[in-house]
Image: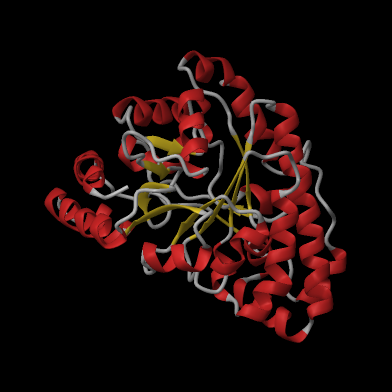
Length: 349
């Protein structure tokens, strides 16, 4: 993102109402390849194709903020690859990582990876280094250190059901597992910051936080995510959980979250009430059923409803409830942006 976009994002999150409403989307490999007319495998395997696809999105929608901006990623494989997971690729769909643990009792066997050398992590960094100059020539900088959250990574390594069972039956080894993953994640974020001093924010993505109850959230999520957000001197902590979010939302401030991306199944009013007025929200149009599957007119209609129902333009980045999904068209994105620009100024300050 540009320095101007970064400053606008900071001001909006801190409570300054912008002159024009801010529209932004999380974009990565679920959406970019199909929209750009390339395969998912091409997007991952060619740095030039990756760069040009991101560049095309930015230039097609110059007034939309794309987050985190030139995201160097391999779907959900990045962190599991560092732990030695088998990676399974698909030409047109997202890849996946095979489990490496069968039970949480094996947590003590897990070796903390080196983010400088292990798995796909060096390729993540090198891709950005190789294209840092062209990115900067577009007026953009690398502003976010990015990592999947500790529960999310744990679910890749041993399975979601097995992780949930471990929380209930073996909390001691569950903490061992999360401790190893959290320390790795902190090291990974610190390494990103060292390699790119322009980084001033952290993006953590963890949908598994939405699968647990209140007691488990306080014990297994809050303290570890808080440590990750405190790992560098960050000006903006951005948290994504587009699974069930009502349990974790009251703890966002305690975790250090400044900006929250959540499920479309929750209203923005509901999340604002639970999160408190100091946490900025990014959402919340249904991504698949409206933004991807709807007509431009349906997108306009549902966007109008969203704006009217929320009725607030303070600390908001207008978006969809989660990352940009597959098959969202240029026309639907423009319909969303135009409607936001028309409807949000009508709201009272």
